[in-house]
Length: 308
Image (cartoon, rainbow, N blue to C red):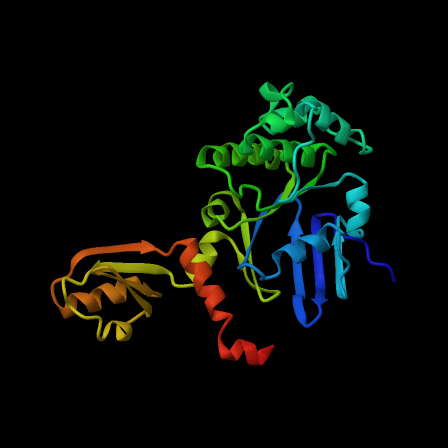
């Protein structure tokens, strides 16, 4: 019996695996991305992010399992213009204007986005008649974004979209991306700038060693991986006994300050008060970086390696 595709799902991985020699780059991933979601794909170098993206774009075929985009093979969705991609590589074509190159790419799709609209969404209207090979790095990145939008896609895939951009250019790019997402479109992006995932993603998927090790909102990942940070001045005192305080998961010393990652900050602070006067006490949620490091370092444990 043929199953009817779930029309609410944009991307589906079902037991997807990809092997290169002895390396399982993607190791049995199950993942669904619903229409309208903005999802960040995070992981260390070599974790499997780029391979997962290549499967999603039909650039590689899974060795096991399946990958579908809008209920079809990825290549079908890409050819129909339903998927746009902005990859890390690519140089501007010399001696053509921004408008000309976007127009050329748009004409290759069956239902292109009007060129003026693509330029506006990418923040390029005022640069439309400039030569693409004479733009700054941030402006070139916006041209790549416009090219990814040219086919009027329902899903856009961004692989490290702000790599090597300065702060101002990064802010301009994400403003453009949010404008695209606000139309109800689906966005999947990978990034090494964790604050970008924290600020722009509805959902964060962490991949390590080809597997998904976490999937949820930024707040959910933070709560599940350390909860809060309790920090204070050591004032010359040692750290003996801090790991035994209630709720404490780990202890880190930076200069003369101790940082305690704790699952119960109230209990930790009460116990610290019993030790004696504490100076410079601060309690704050863990950052996404702290949660990410906890997740990926946990995947290095002997237990996980044995389970593999």
